[in-house]
Amino acid sequence: MDTNRIDTGNLRVPSGFEVESASLRTPSSPVIPVSDLPSDLSAPTWKEKLSSVPAVVKSRVAGVKPLMNSKLETVRSTMQRSSTQLSDSLRSKTAMWAGIATASGVGLGLLGRFAMHRAHHRTRMPAVVIIEASC
Image (cartoon, rainbow, N blue to C red):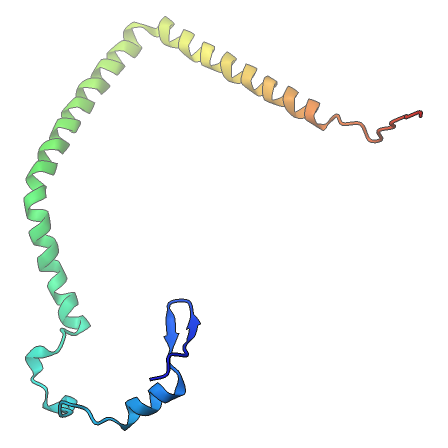
């Protein structure tokens, strides 16, 4: 065989002599037509794969479902308790919540003014820069 090969990365292209010698050899095993192959060796079709998906999903979900239901019930009860506590707090401590709302409004306003101030100062660049140099 000729060892002169064209190297194109991972792809190795054989020289002409190798192709010629490979084409002259007869196969060692007899060729079996596709129609004579047993049907149990063939891969399942996409319809068969698709029909088996719900059973696979159900089997996966069956083990996880009780755990998820218990966690969901825990979250629901916690949210129910916290929402009732919040509504009681809103009714009983109105001045506190009004102060929080006012402070957050003032804070957002100051942040907006600061951002606007920075934006205006960034655009104030001189149009012409004159550099004098004397030798």
